[in-house]
Image: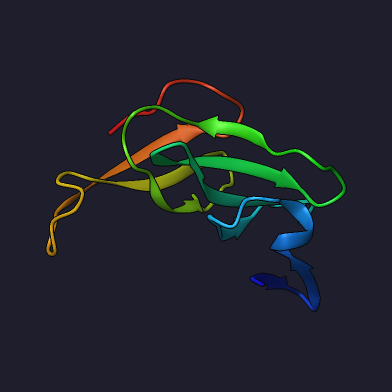
Length: 107
């Protein structure tokens, strides 16, 4: 059972998502949702899970693996890494960003 804590509040991720492959990484600025890297099929995508809702909102998806997501300092974009050679023991990554309000990812 994974948990994410912020300012004394603990949310059990298993209470939010049925998926065992959901990795929590950051909170929204209002502390009402968690950003997760969530396995959807063969790859990990980025979702936003509101703590008072049963289903997550898909934010960043596609054929590439997406890992370790964080908000930028002003909370307007989510930053995440895309491995350039998935499966390699040592690998380079591309740092990507996408607006949390929607829009295409950018390098």
